[in-house]
Image (cartoon, rainbow, N blue to C red; front, side):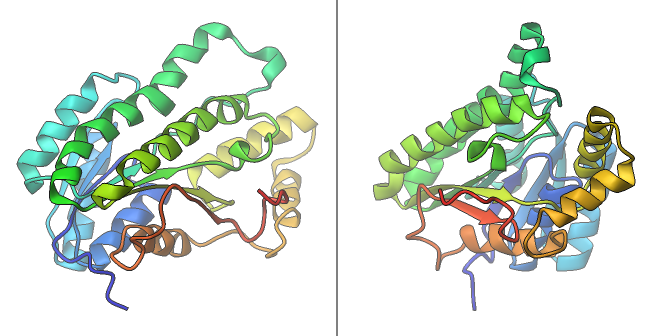
Length: 263
């Protein structure tokens, strides 16, 4: 299937590794030119060089600090300078602070809100005008199972991701007529640095070994395994594609049926 992405211009946040990198690779494999953004210039440059070599597209690395919403303006401007515009935005960020609700330090809320809500929304609004003018655009945000069912030891996920979910649906309703789709993808458990960190935190919380905590995670997945990064990237690429133009305001799960709730 031709996804209609050749020559499209994609900006991907937190994309130098993990799920973001998988999304960047999948889009580039379909012929999209990409900007890989993260907080570390060296990782951005390394990922961009590897993507350009592997897929024969233009790829650039541009740093951005998601804890500073005003920095999204500079990221947008630098991306437009590099690519000429933004047709696709993939919203991602580093793993939120782990912890339980009863132990939450309220002073930590604002920086986490900036990273998870304020910066993504600011960047969405910056890319939106060009998409609406061209009558074509794709915005895909990374969600979490915490939007559907509260996750243990992940109070920030459970609290702040639903805010972005509400904005995403509101925006989709307003710009669907302009040929712009705004969706979210909820990943299950993929082997990333975040999974190792959260598993170690859970092990300490439950008083068990990390190996036992990892075993419990696998046992909780009906598919019986962790996801492969290519499986996640493929879904993101399709959500950004021309054939997916009627999927809008949706939440798509890529989790091996890990979320037990119906909605």
